[in-house]
Amino acid sequence: MLEAVSAGALACAAGFLLWAALHDVATRTIPDTVSVVLAGIGLGLRLADGDLQWALLAAGLVFGIAFLGWRFGLLGGGDVKLLGTVALLVPPAFVASQLLAIALAGGVVALAYLLLGPLLRARPAGPRPASLPARALRAEAWRIRRRGPLPYAVAIAAGTFVTLFPMLVPSGA
Image (tube, rainbow, N blue to C red; front, side):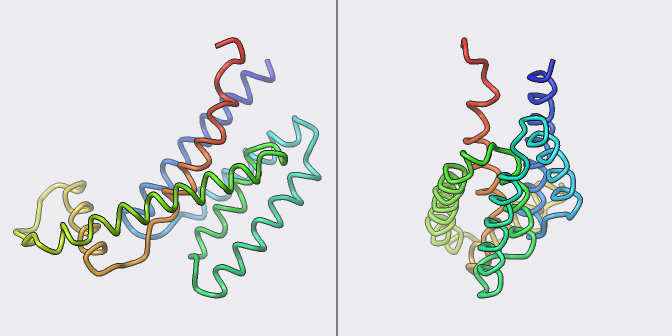
């Protein structure tokens, strides 16, 4: 029963991570609601596993280091909060792997943006699209052309998904 609840909680967390990533792409912000809900899910999971103290220590360290990144202009405030909360979603022993997966995903996002830049500079903007997804894509192309900030919640979500996926797949599969 506890495994089913944990799997449900992680699936719910995945939905909130997807929301954070999409919101960050569209607006370059991450709603505080996402971080609050993910923190609640993570605290519940770590309490159920009996490793809450170590998880709080790991999440605090991640948050503290990310805060320094914010202080020096390397990360946005929403990214800092999201990094601290996603560290609670995995057992403390997996936080280092999670951070590595997030960093690698961030490199992929950065590389994609670097490669898309020259392609988007060569294309004329055209008329304003009517649909919301088309307008969001146009705004993203504008940000890429101007080398704006990356939507790092995409990397945080992707790295966390990669870390969580083995925990969601039954061991007999």
